[in-house]
Structures are given as C-alpha cells and as structure tokens.
Length: 175
Image (tube, rainbow, N blue to C red; front, top):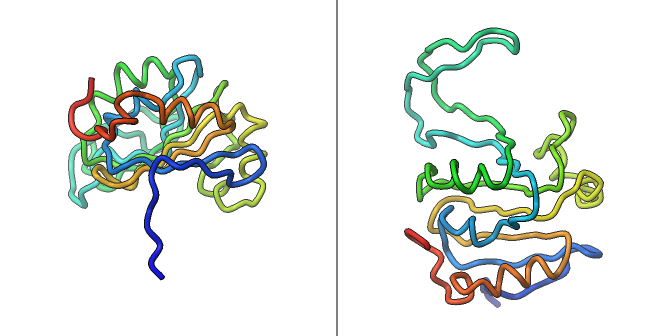
C-alpha cells in the first residue's frame, strides 16, 4: 500500500499540537501563514547561499571580534526578529528556491534554546510552549510540500482558510 500526502488535513500530533501539509510552495507563502499579532520570528539555520561555492562575506572570527571580509562557504546562522520586520524586509529578499525552518513565538528566543537539540526531544512541544511558541513552518526547498505545526487548532484553520492557501495558489509571486 502506498501512502499519499494529503494536503489541507488537520491532524493532532500531540495533545494540543496540530499539523497540516501545504501544497508545493515557496517562501512567498509566509505572509499568508504567519500570525500578524505574534511578535517574533526565529529563522533556523538560514543559509544565504545554499550552493556549495566560495564567496566573499563579512563575518566575525570570534564573538567579540569585528566582522571581516573573508572568503567563506556554507555560512549557516539563526536569525531572530519582529514578525513585521521579517515579512517586510526578509521575505522579499529570500530566493524562491530557498528552504526554511521557521518558528513564530510570542517572545524572544532564549539563548539556551537550540532547535536541532530540541527537535529530537519527545517534550519539544511542551518546551516550545513554555517559550511562547505559536507555530512552526518547515519547507525543505522551494517547490516542495510545506509542513505547518501549531500550538492550537485555530491557527491551522486560519492558515488553511486564507484565500491564497485555500485555492492552492502558493507558488511564485503572491499578493
């Protein structure tokens, strides 16, 4: 028996943790997913260039060192900012082929919270809730199915009811 991906269905992964799958999409769908009233976005392990090539980039060599122009490849870092800043400043600059792991929270992410360590824990959703977690959006790369996991069913229902998402028009340049 072959399992098929079923989009726009809501499942409860854990008590009070809801999940759905969106059609193949790009990061352009994010303004239709993110909650305007939720204050912070945490972009996990952002790669400004997903290609394995060398390029010039200003980076510090230590935490307290000034940034220097260096030849680097595979730069990876987390970003944290206000939701409005992320939607208005970052989303338009992300490549359509870019994949993202993004969490939206009611407050800043504490220094001690590390996504990769947290994602392996069976208590991850409880820990995230303690830190103001509202939703997670995971897109492996542009043009792929996206997963949305949220701290309440209403959030997933709101996302699925968005006219752009409900119509399945979640690729390319979106209004």
